[in-house]
Image (cartoon, rainbow, N blue to C red; front, top):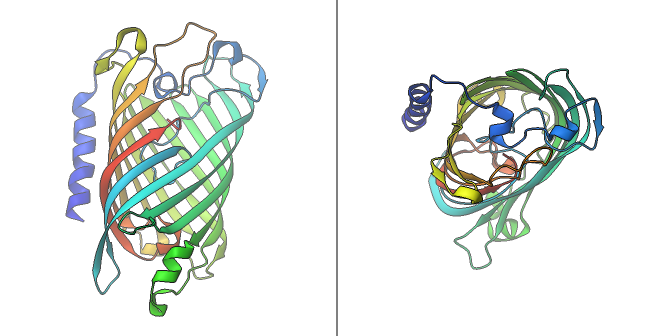
Length: 312
C-alpha cells in the first residue's frame, strides 16, 4: 500500500514540524468537548461535554456526516469503481460524570448509538448498499493530558434491498455480520498533537469464523490558533488526522484512514455557558479492508470530501 504509507508519513511528519514551542489551551477545549464551568465540580447527572475527545478519522466514529467518495473495490477477480455517498447519523449522550479535583478531569459514562449507510450514486434511485447499526456504553476517563475510553458495543450490518435485487445470484452470498466488542483506547495530548492507541476484542461473533482481535491507533493535529478567524462569528481551524486499524481477520494488514480540513467553531461564550458544537469540511482518504460491514472481506480504496457535524 505505497499510497497509504505516503499519506501516513506526511501526516506524522507535518504534525511534528508544526508543533509550536509555546503553551496551548487544553485539548478538550480545543476539540469542543470541554466541560461547562457550572458542571466541572462533583457528580453531574446528564452532563454536557465529555472528558475524552472523539476520534476525527475513525470511519466508525459516532457522529453525523455526509461524504461523497470515489471508491474502487478489489473483489479478488476484478477491480470495480463507483461514486458513493456515505452517510452517518450518530451521537453520544452523557448519563453521568464524576468530576476530578482538577478542572477537566473526571470519569463519565454515556450511551452512544448511530447508523452508517452507503448509497450508490451511479443508479437512478441511489441504491442503498449497506447499513451498519451500532449501540454502545462508553466509559471515558481523563487525568491531565492522559485520557481513555472503555467501551462495550454491538454492531450489526445489513445489505440494502435494492442492492440485493440488482445483483446476480452468484454475488448475493450474504454475510450476516453481527458482533459485540470490548474496546480499550488510551490517548495522550501534547500541545496541538494527540496520539492514541489500543484495541478491541470481538465476542458473540457472526459468522463464527470471524477472528476476534483488532489493534487500533492514530494521531491528530489541531492547533489552537484559527487559520481563518471571523471576528465575533468565531472562525475555522486546521485539523489533520490519521487513524490505523489492523485486524486478526485480515492477517494484521492495516487499514489507513486520513482526514484533513477546516472545522468551524463559534466565538467562545463566557463561563459558565457551554461551547457550541462544531462542524467541518474534510478531504478524506481510506485504504484497506472495507469498513462497510457486509463487505468486510473485500479491500477498498476511496477518496472524497465530507461535511461532518457535532462529533468533534
